[in-house]
Length: 125
Image (cartoon, rainbow, N blue to C red; front, side):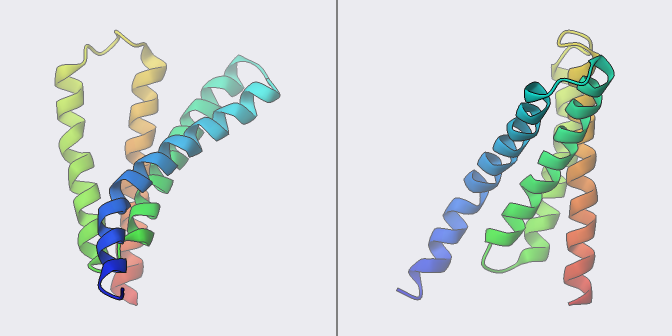
């Protein structure tokens, strides 16, 4: 049973981080829809929710992974950096609107900053 626990954690760390990152975005957006403060707050909430969901995404993957935590952080950050040009080249820039592009950028910034923070924490530990 001791050998099975890390295997299960390796299997679920990516789907769990995706699910929690997605859920955290929609929970924060739900808070805005419950109490609407106007159009400017709507845009601010989109960007804040996206950056926090990106940070939660990488943190949950880091937390669930049983070992090699620095490598997990590096892999998440590298996949994010690879996805930036792929997304900009495969998606027309203003097809979804400027808010969607800013949301993607905010989520990327959240992932990169949390990745930097977690990497520094692992270096100091």
